[in-house]
Image 1 (cartoon, rainbow, N blue to C red):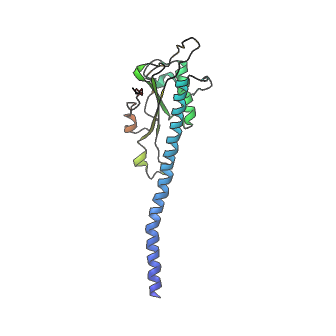
Image 2: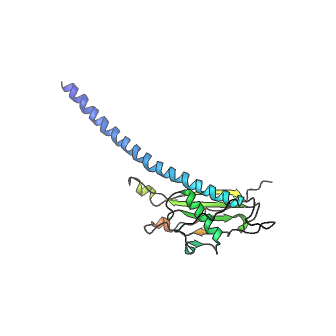
Image 3: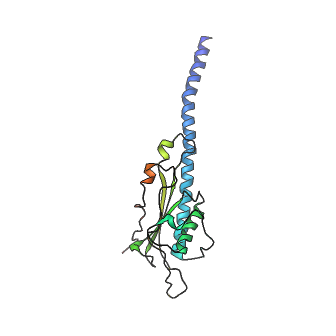
Length: 197
């Protein structure tokens, strides 16, 4: 009889050890799965924005976001088309507009056919369970999509309507942003020359 009790006690101890590991694994799957989902969303938004800029296709007039005002930009004066491109990216990201940040950079500092454009998106990482908040909550999820500009906007031949280089939304993401988020910048968002010789 004592042998069965000792085996039962050993099973309880083994389950207690395994249960902690399983709980940690479950919480990790929830938190990092959410981060991965957000990464896919911002990558999709950046890709759609870059495609809009390089092809100069379609009309962006349907896109407007109430969370984006003129004061939210830094990097130069912006046109209504610039704001609509930013709003289209935010719409395609399909996360909270007020936390999605967008920057657009052109190779050589100007929007010209044959040059590269980089559309960059940043979104705050957040632990859904709170267990990994110390690890995730002061970080940003970022992505950069770079493509070559095929044509410019406009109806003249050649088209001459260009977008403003260096436009970006200012950090931080929200009022409760951590110091690391307040110190973040767009230095990682660069349009590089992709021409091969």
